[in-house]
Length: 212
Length: 366
Image (cartoon, rainbow over all chains, first blue to last red; front, side, top):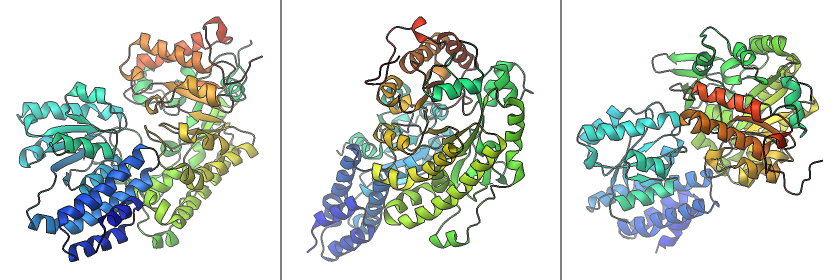
């Protein structure tokens, strides 16, 4: 019998191989995939977020834990969708135009996936037009924009304005993040959420889709 | 006090003695800003330094000493001299797209750039000839941590390897450190007065990695650079954006004579820094180039600059600078206002201009 706490522990320790092996064993033992996700992987990531928030975990620990969770979730995904379990939500993400920083965005993606979100990554240097087009074509719950440079932050504001102009603003919730971004600025440009780090991004996204 | 040269002013403040005026320089000054101030698009960076009587000129390694190969001009994609692919968008500095080392085996066959190529020192030689003794000519180099995680391994692979495969980090660190030590030795031979090492060790909330990993992987290459500087009796400054409170002692113990930029975005208050470690290193900062220099009024810039001087100028040990660089978004008139304020309110003794000067804890100024 697989103890799901052990999966959590592997996620916290960033042990991808052990996390994968235990997830396989749990599936083989007919533990429901949703239970493995919620009581194993997500709980592990929650603990990782707490450790990061307390300054006990840093980028290396966050990355290896995020990778362990992402790989375990990949294993669960086919079973989850076969069983009719939908992702927590669908998240569209990208770094704003003029900015090619991506580590922050990539950590957010890892944490979202580990928490059962479906994520579409538009990459870096994404123009407002590209964001709007993706929102129009897709069925996303949240659009997340990352900006690591003060001078590229206005492009997140422009994207929100363009969404309004195109009549798409109510189609998605908008979140912003990145080193120079603040809650005050997020409020000013009319974003629905601001996250100072990846764990907060997951927490706020989950709250925005009413599943916290 | 008699008027000092820019070099004397900086060296004196680094030794925690009060110079004639609080010194000022910047690691990067965007050409658009320089041109707007000088009303002359043909003026060089050195012309601007002389025109504004700035105390030091920085030979920035990435823009003046590194080689690049253009891969896609339209998209701004180039290969840097380490082999990493980078992309230029809104800034003069590219951002890493793809590292050169994809697996441990790649390290065995990796050929690093040659630090001894004469052309790398052409600009430094010109600036030494023009400014030697008058202004500090600063040899800038990129932190080994940055080169290793951006050009060589890629940031995610680097951070993961810190825990999963430390040997790789040691190997790439050695490649980059060997280059930098040779490069900087050559710069000092040419006549550089100081060394300035850029590259962040922290983010807004705190250090990128734990104290243990900072000491194990990040600080040692910088320490070797600082040792080289000190063996030649020149100061060595370290830059890191972000909140460095949890690791400032590691930076100091590794041999930093100055810390830049005491990042206000990272919650660093320069008065608090002065009180806690301002007697150990020269503080370089921290007029906000994210806010006041970009969107503030002249009065706001003046007020912020005065506050920096009031909080950190007493007893020397302050170079008043922006909180990172004079990038393209800085209002030219705001930068001029900052410099004018330093010249007006940075004249020692500061008691002539301020009450409530901040002092390091337990220190009494004679």
